[in-house]
Amino acid sequence: MKKTKRSVNRRNSLKANPRKSPSGTRFAEVAARLAEIGRGFHARGWVLGTSGNFSAVISREPLRLAITSTGLDKGSLAPEQFLEMDGAANVVRGEGRPSAEALLHLAIARGVDAGAVLHTHSVWSTLLSGSHASQGGIALEGYEMLKGLEGVRTHKHREWLPILENSQDMIELGERVSKTLRESLGIHGFLLREHGLYTWGAGLQEAKRHVEILEFLMEVLVRSGAAQSS
Ligand SMILES: [Zn+2]
Image 1 (cartoon, rainbow, N blue to C red):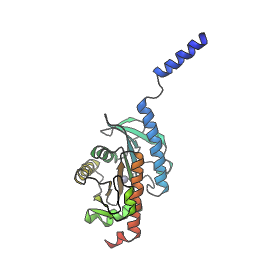
Image 2: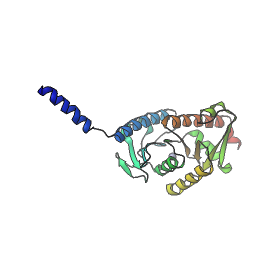
Image 3: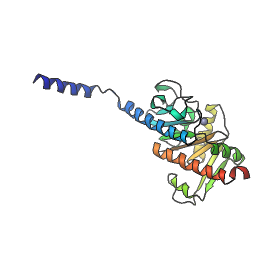
Image 4: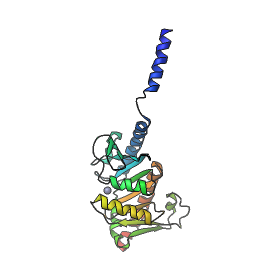
């Protein structure tokens, strides 16, 4: 009788004092998934060295993002290397500093209601964003792989990938990103000149798919000579 009572009390107390809050559990799950995606991108050569950064929305009200801490080797990315930041890029959970490009992630999370934002520095995006900078962007058209972009139903779709001049001033660059998202409705990503790709999705799986599709198409363009001919 006594034993039963103790075990009931123990269950109740565990229920009343969960070791992890719901937001903490969601953060841990998202950080694990982001780390796995990041290691995969490193293996593909899209985020070599400490390049690239990844984020996902933990909550909308108030806005909270899980994001890579700065200066990490993406080949050995671990869940503990993610931070939770608020809508002003202040760290609210975890150790370290967010990436310098955290303000761009916030601009995208707000501008297109993205649930996840992924940023890569591939050879292909570096070459194409340099060769096509004077045109302000690259048109991707006629490829079956375009159908991997959310909402695209035919290879005849014309996807415009804007190219923004690179900058180390993230406040200024964040404003240009917000302006581009307002003016180029329906885009799935953009390039920073001789820097890399930003893309996003409603969730992590969609954002990951968009990286794979856009990186594939940029590699096709470079290999077919587009980076030399323009
Ligand atoms: Zn970058």
